[in-house]
Image 1 (cartoon, one colour):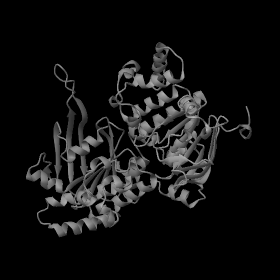
Image 2 (cartoon, one colour; image 1 turned 90 degrees about the vertical axis):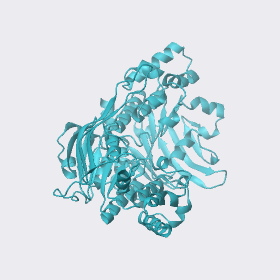
Image 3 (cartoon, rainbow, N blue to C red; image 1 turned 135 degrees about the horizontal axis):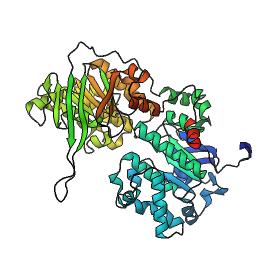
Image 4 (cartoon, rainbow, N blue to C red; image 1 turned 135 degrees about the vertical axis):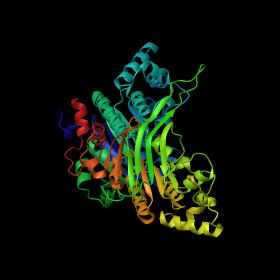
Length: 553
């Protein structure tokens, strides 16, 4: 086996510059790195740092008007990809270099079956009969532990969860056994257990085929567990690079230190809420069933999402509701808000049953109960100005005139850190973090007593996530509202929660003080969640351990 110094790079990027039209603004400026066969390298940084555009430049998949500057060089297997004819580059895409995109629901064709999409690459790059293509597709689906592979081939993307779609996307790419895999944020917004499964699967498949991996991510915890080498990008430039254990445990550049410092750490929460207080919200033996799909004759069997849950939220405290996707935590949060009708059991707010519909009791309760949705872009009206969105809840207050509403909106803008000039903007003109601030402003503008925060930081990069979590905590300390913090991100939960309730398959399996749950978990499922959480270990004894474990399995 050759020494590492004797191994020539599989991919060598030199002086990469990506510009907005020739000679325009540079989104990637002078990037250099090498990636050897079988190795894994991560490009990390905040949103807008240029890491995705750098990765897309390798395959010349840049959105117009972005172009690669002529002085750039991207050598793959000894050939400069920037100098190849489009027809030659098409032969390399998929066959030699595969790419897993950030959002599989967008990159998978909703009008084609999974089987058709998996077969497409083999038809284009391999001369194989249809029967062999089907056999290879079935074998790959079995390899990634898909139940009933034959049924999967005939299904459509919308019939699968986010984690399963990402598995299928990875399987489709790895069918061709590429020498280089580009993975662009492959686990964003996936829950902790699914994230670990997808990454372990990716490592297993690439190890089997000797595939090099170029990983794009903002999750430093995940990078520290899986990746040996890292390049830190800021505003299109590489500010620091080296072994992940060295860069993340002892960062030299100020920007890298900023990223590491932004990672969630256990906060000063854990003491709010008094056991002697009357519960603000009380859930007793709640069961929630979803009716089965309509069929030609009757309906399919109903699905039980929540099984007899008991829960209380004290005044001023933050109760975190954690669990994997599909555990029922969002359904329970919506039921508390009166947005989902329980099949049985009771939910009370301030000692009164939560009212459904639009009657006077329901309206009064909803003035004091607000929700921050997971995806602010979907929950904000794209036709309304930000000022209108934030101020709309105030229209229901008969005691507030127009000037009082404008003053309250301006006050809330300042509280959530949004400039006054943003009032006239539309949602699409804001970044993800800014849109989340708008969603928080809308939730607190009426000074509610209770807020449900449904995955409020799931798709944000680390620095923005830290800002949002600190904002929620500071607003809670100022106004004293209670918060049900629904999340699969245990790092965020550890930072903000007073108590934690662990939910599995619609049941609360463990509940207690935050420190007890994190330091002394009693239930096996809680221990599984904590083991799967890729929190940054400052000792870095385990950097890259996941890859080693998968290789030795």
